[in-house]
Length: 105
Picture 1 (cartoon, rainbow, N blue to C red):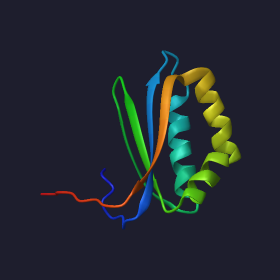
Picture 2 (picture 1 turned 30 degrees about the vertical axis):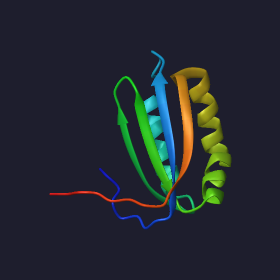
Picture 3 (picture 1 turned 120 degrees about the vertical axis):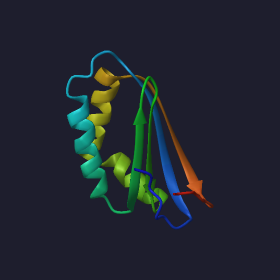
């Protein structure tokens, strides 16, 4: 689903990843992290797609909200597990969105 109800400005956290061959418990853990993120102050929405390259974009009101999410203890534990087990490589980018537009039939 495309998040299309946001009012600028807001922030986008773009998480791009390549997985290892070991995906044991990955899907369950990713779903749990999405549920937890939705409970965080300032969370606005999330979009995700995966093939060989995975891209997840989460949307936040402020940089402080992003920092609190990064420092959430449960998120930190899962991030460490991801480095050890699931991710071959990842890159994270934080962007301020000042303008947006879209199309929908």
